[in-house]
Image (cartoon, rainbow, N blue to C red):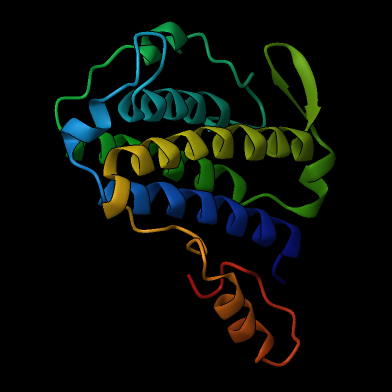
Length: 184
């Protein structure tokens, strides 16, 4: 029997990954290296940080602390990728690690305790923590992409001025249980 709780969590993570994917499709490697100032991060640095976090949090998730000794967090904020393919490969590696950790979870796993920097979290709390962290950074990625592409940006949601048309299409369908990501 499918675990609907885990399925719903996966759909949320899938959605945020898709937002990143659709942003990357619109950008060049040079775009992904741009930062608005010296104290801000480029898209490639944000990706590097997210991947470092994902690998640390989700590797041997249930039995090892989520902040691994081998993680070099400060180095995640330094440019190091040499091309767009490297960025995408790292991005995919991080997401694969995440999905490999959450998909086998069962309902009973949700109440287990895992640690992040020696602070105990229920598995469900650790998941929700990352469901806050990753969208925060993916929003930064999308916003930087929108700034870089300006008028050439392809909207990732309902484009400005199209809410009435969008809602009309949605309300023309029968009521039913479905996830907002089902047709993305």
